[in-house]
Length: 437
Image 1: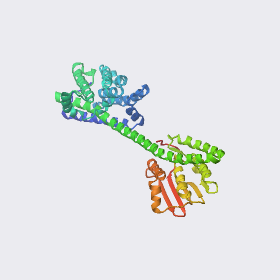
Image 2: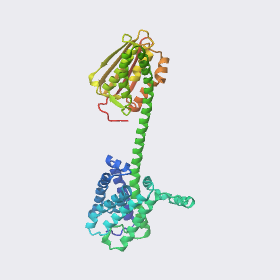
Image 3: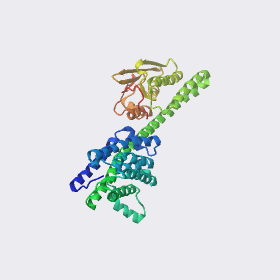
Image 4: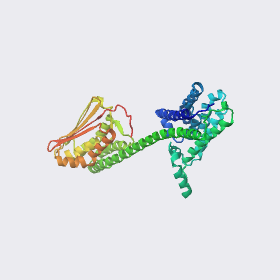
């Protein structure tokens, strides 16, 4: 049921109506579950029910405020029914329109319920007719400004814009409601009654703006979620690419060791093969971005066992000072192997007498510190920049840490000729894996 509105009262009501629609859309999108529903294009039955549970109660409250308190701008029966059908499909539109109009039906607005149900059903048909469901999200508040351009393209190229279909249908439904309100008794259906055609055009425009504004707000969220998802996929691709740089480099050296051992000590070669199988099994688990430090150290043990056999126990000594409370802290997978490999290759291998590698870990103030020292040949500043700045191994580690931790990590390298090299890494403590790339 509606009373005749004139001039300023009508404009004020229409502005508040569009504002209420925008506020409601913005409020709903703050819920993570609703954002997922909006982001998902093909919804199952449970998701459609969830969509109804999110949209029906606030829309029904709006109709109640109009009936009980007289606030006309809260009533979004037609717009809400159309929106539910356009987003959720025929069933959601039909059920949603019926549910939000139950209270008006109880107030003897006999046509409200069938009208809202029909609008929701037809909006679902509009969705089904559109060949690309993504075109639904192109329905924006100012799409009507593109009508002249659309008509020109339609005339010249016979090529239309499917986003115009919801626009015209929404306007047509509001026009139909206005005409229906003039035909039936005043109490049977609610409509903003106006004195002339110009004001009726504003009512139609406000209805279109209510639907378009909600879609625009939700589409912005969809774009943000899609961008975030693409960034995660890009990060995973970059991490896979960096990991693939490590694996061939490591396997090449290990297989050379195995091939040399087979010639003069088959039993030792068999032991190396068992160690290598453990290593390969770990390398095949590329989906793991983070692993417990305990597992990373076990991996290094297998690698170093092979290297000790290669160099000899008297030439390569390994010392570990690992605090027990650091073992369950998660670190990037394959973090230590490139560092240890570089220490052996560039620090200890050139020395005829061999040397030592020290691995230390400690945990302070929510930060994990890992140090790898060797007493090898050491390097000059120029050589250090060449090997650790441009080489695959250490530059790879630095790039992976940057991708995973941003500016929340530190990686320092100190080296002196004839004394050795120290690499110190400090990263935030991760007690559990909350981020998987």
